[in-house]
Image 1 (cartoon, rainbow, N blue to C red):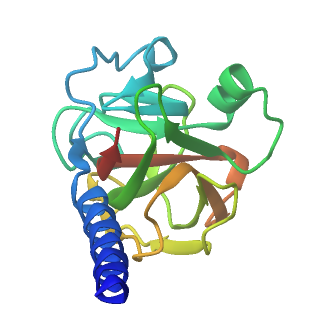
Image 2 (cartoon, rainbow, N blue to C red; image 1 turned 180 degrees about the vertical axis):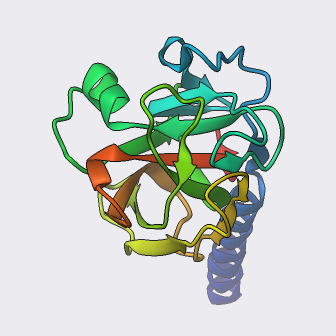
Length: 210
């Protein structure tokens, strides 16, 4: 009788642990980062860094408001998108890399997050933000778990349909991009020059654990 009680107790504990784990996985809160509520300037985009947004800390990203019909891309949701540029990397992150990149990390109050998908594109920068042309590129995404280990790097290609007003491409992350502490976006290659290419992201979908 005593042995049966011990076995039942062990099974109950194992089931409870599995249930807790399943509940933890299902209790993340979903967000779609559109950046549309950030006051953005077409003429002075460097004044509008994204910073903390929906529980994520954006590094190297600016909120931008392209002039529809003139700019190289069209945001997935109007009026804004987020843009990572080489000049902003140097200003905000102190990076001297020739491959423009941006980062997102779990902000205070967020233990970890799942990165689900995002819309993206690349621009050949005019340095003013008003008349940038869309540009073909390959973007590399690298995630890091809360234990410091790296998730498998994934790449996504952007092939614009026109130099102006090109729609953004959808990038969907694999299931390995869960329980992340931070993610880096970098331009692996570009049709012209990487250092003159801006990385655009919009409608980034993530799920946060708090």
